[in-house]
Structure formats: C-alpha cells, structure tokens
Amino acid sequence: MKKDFMFSSESVTEGHPDKLCDQISDAIVDHFLQQDPFSSVIAECAVSTAIVFIAARFSSTAHIDFSSIARSVINQVGYDKHDFSSKTCSIVTSLKELPPDEQRNFNEREMTEHQLDMLPVKNQVTSFGFACNQTPSLMPYPIWLAHKLSRKLTSVRIQKILPYLAPDGKTQVGIEYKGGYPFRIHSITVVASQQQPEKYGGPSLNKLKSDIIDTVIDSVFADEELQPDGNTRIFINPDGPFITGGPSVHSGLTGRKNAIDTYGEYSRHSGAALSGKDPIRIDRVGTYAARYAAKNVVSAGLAEQCEVQLSYSIGLAKPVSIQVETFGTGKISDEKIASLIERHFDFRIGGILRQFNLRYLPSQVKGGFFRKLAAYGHVGRMDIGLPWEVTDKSSILRSEAGL
Image (cartoon, rainbow, N blue to C red; front, top):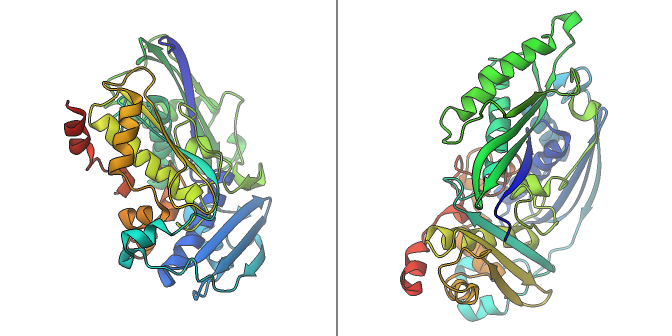
C-alpha cells in the first residue's frame, strides 16, 4: 500500500446545478413518502438556463405538485435573480404513474425473518462503504475539509456576512500524506460566484480573496489540528471573477456528483446515483448499509481503514458477495472481519429498511429527510442524525474479534 502521496477531493455548495437537481429529486421523494410510506418513486431532474425538466415514474397514493416542489427548492437555495429564478423559470415534467406493485407493498416492521429472506432486491448493484480514522466522523480528510469549506461558503452567504455571494460555489482540498496519514495541507481552492461585477457594486477580486480567506478558510481551519503552512497553495477564483453561476452558466443533472456524495474518490463508489430514489432501491440504501458496517469496523479498532463491498443480484434477498479490504491496517484478517460483518449486519433490503426506518424518516424529520442528504454528502455527516453513522455494533465486533 502506498504510504506517501498527495490526494485531493472536491465539494460543491447546494447552489451548484447538479446539487440543485439532487435536492429537487430528493424533495420529491420526501413528499411522496410523507404522504405514503410505501410509495415507489424514481425522480430525475435536469436544469439549464431558465428551464427545469423533471422526469418521474411512480406508484403511490400520494398527490404531488412537482412544479411547486421544484420552485420551493430553487427559492430556498437562493436563486431569485433575473438570470435564474424560482418565479420565472420554466418547469417541464414527464410523469409516468405506474400501477400498484404488490411486491413492493410490504411492511418490513411486521415481517418474520423467513419473510425477509424471501424478499428479493429489484436491482443489481455493487455498493461500497468506507471508513478511516482520519477525522472524527471516520471520513477521509480531503473530502471532510472540502465539505466544511463548502458549508461555510454557503453559511456566510445566508448569514449575509458576505451578502454579495451567489448560491453556486465549489471547493477543493489537497492533502499530503506521509506514512499513510495526513501530514500537511498542500492546497486549498475556493471558487465562489458573485451577484454582480465590480463596476456594478460587486467586490474586486482582491476584496473577494481577502473576504474568503478571513471568513471561510480561516474559520474552517480554526479548530483543525492540521493547519495551512507557508507553502500551502491557496486559490480563490483562480480563473478570475465568477460573476454569474448556477444554471445560467452550466447545466445540472441528478446523480452527477457521486464522489462528492460519498468519499471524494478516496474510496470506491458504485457509480449509481443516490438521490431521487425511494428506499426500496438497493443501489441507494446498499451504500448506506455498507458505510454502517465499515464505520463500525473502524470504530471497533479492527482496522484503521475499511472498505466494505456488497454485491447484489436481482431476485435474491442477500448480497451474493460481501468483501472487506483493510489495506494492510487490519488487526485481524479481512476474511475474519467479513465473517463478523455478515454475522452482525443485516444486508437484506427489508432488514436495511427496518434497521434505518427509511420509509418513515421523511415524516419524522422537519423539512424532510432525503433532501438533507442531497448536498454535502450522504455519508460522514455529523450535522444530521443519520442511522448509518451510529457505531452501536463496535463493542460486539471488538469483543468477538478478541481485542
């Protein structure tokens, strides 16, 4: 395993067009499940200049106003200017209502273990979950920092600390590793869109750079053990002023930021979109289950890094393969860890739904549940009480491993 290297990960704000699409798609999923927990829905979204396109197919007793949901999300994200606005954009829908599917209309809370064994997945996917001991959330350090910068960039805009910022922005952090551990901050990049150019009252590029360093970068790193040094390269809008961002500049599409949604490419991900799918889709919730297992392995001290791979085939309830890779950091063999995982974690679709209560969380969480995942990561979040982020099985794993 390579010990000395440099790795970078990026994040984007909730105003990035791809993330705007993810949020619209997941807000639609939330609305369906809030009215009918047994809804089956796939919702995809595309945005471009003044246009939002929503394609959805669903089976549900819920009554959904797709356009109203989209406009509400756009407005909440902060798009209210003439170039792209929740009030003036055109919304086009292509909707397909499907007949009721009795095979999906089951209540996992009331099913026996035998019934759960007979409940097959309807999709095929290989899902990955990862955890490492680089951060408090057991996430890789580059994506952890990139998300913190993106969230702060949004925060200073919403709080009007930097009122001239627009919703679209992105960040990137490069970390130098030595001996397999983060050693120094190699580079920090923040790209922030502005509401208007300097000649119309917007900030100069020098003013923007100073403001971003003071209110975003310095604030994010104030409580970090690893600090930028004199050789850290800091880039603020390196291509010059970014006056108009968002859909008026570049198009967006649901599911196009999988690395940002997961581990910043530090670990593998399935490639399947996570947003816009109800929780019966194993290509979405399998990712959460794999993360749950990997995080508990690292929390238990069985390894410093752990990647869990779950392979599902259509028509079967359980994964056809459960594999573990600890990259040489395991205290016991990867095969033994895989055996422990298989014994103590339920990877059946019904078991995942029951363990995480996924069909009912949109009704229990104010403002919906899945939409909150659509920006700043589906895993590693410490601002939301995600059921797959708990480490409740770490003690039994540690005990049975003999550690």
